[in-house]
Length: 116
Image (cartoon, helix red, strand yellow):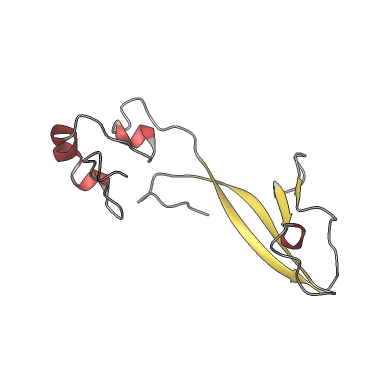
């Protein structure tokens, strides 16, 4: 479909390696990265949030009765627990269940990786 429109698509490419060339060469670019980085942090950094996932297999048939439970209180260190067997694709083994806890993490601009 994109070939018919003569649209060039680049994947697995670091946009910033050739940013100047791309901006000169193309009249339109679809950029899917961090917008503050695109503008060289001229107005500072935006607050990003990262997630850390911890997955655990439990020797019980059912942990929470739902696919997703969100935790909004300040005392709970995680924001969400997903119990995979409650999704259509993951009925799982009898007597076992798999859960994943999501923990919020701060994002820091150090080689674009999250510092824990």
